[in-house]
Image 1 (cartoon, rainbow, N blue to C red):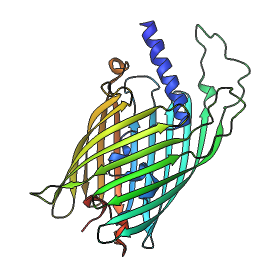
Image 2: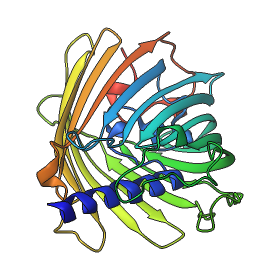
Image 3: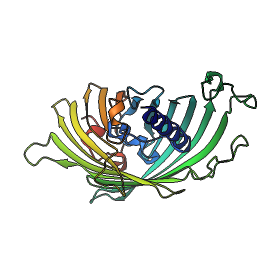
Image 4: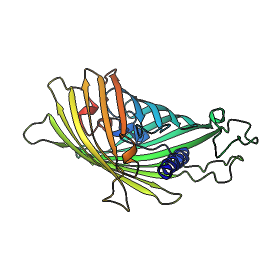
Amino acid sequence: MKKIALYICFLILSYGYGQELNLPVWTQYLADNDFVISPTYAGIGDNLKIRANGLTQWVGIKNAPDNQSIYADFRFANRSGVGVSAYNDKNGNTRQKGLKISYAHHLTLDYKSKQYLSFGISYNINSFRIEIENFNTTYEIPIIDPSITDDRSINNNNFDAGILYRWKNFFVSLNANNLIEKDIDDFTGVEPNQLLNFQLYSGLVLTSKTNKDIEFEPSVFFQLFDSDNRSATDINFKYRKFNRDRNYYWVGASYRFLNDQFLDPLNIGPMGGVMHNGLYFAYSYQITMNDLSGFNSGTHMVTIGLDLFQGASNCACTRGTSQSYYRL
């Protein structure tokens, strides 16, 4: 039992180290919030879109990661959009906070065939801190290292850039995150400085042939880390049903795996959401499939949101691939 406990602690600590590199993307983007993936989605749709997420990972394990975030984007003029996002992340005695400001511009490649191209860029500022005031002595470590005298905090600035192509109801986006190498702090000799990672997100929105108010949306999300070539993939599927007032509900599922372990998933689970008169709610549950599965009840995420200030653009390039982007 002691070995199992040590193993769990090791996984949590290593996860925290990875978090300082990049916060993990779970299923936030599937809660009708593609802006989570890429700044290129800022301004697509007819509303100011606001989404707030609360995520608790590995419920049942003490000091497991916990995250809160908020996203908002809206269009200005006919072809441009801006967005802002902020997050607060807790993982054991580590704290991380960040703010991202994004800009996107949308172009029409061909009006008749409905081909559009979008470019986006984000400026990020992140703050990472280790709460040494919460350090406690143990039987193995009877005293705290006297050389630890401050909070070990550090701030970093970086940029993301992305491109999005849409053709009718097909979409594909490519994003490069953390384009600048990180400044190394003196308090650690193993701190990573290569934060660059790439994200590919693609999918297709299919309208039912028998009912135009029903949509099917298969999609795939791929992430590759440049520092060590680690990569993972999500395979997703969503079903949407609209009513005559353009309110809707949706249900779906996601399957995440490391790309060298396709038949050994990291997480798998259902999700669902509802939009009613501009109010949005979604819930996602991810079942942990690795060695921690016997010690926790999975990962839970709740999304609440608002769609405000409806205003259609004169340019079709800001029209989304799904009916959920706009209200008739």
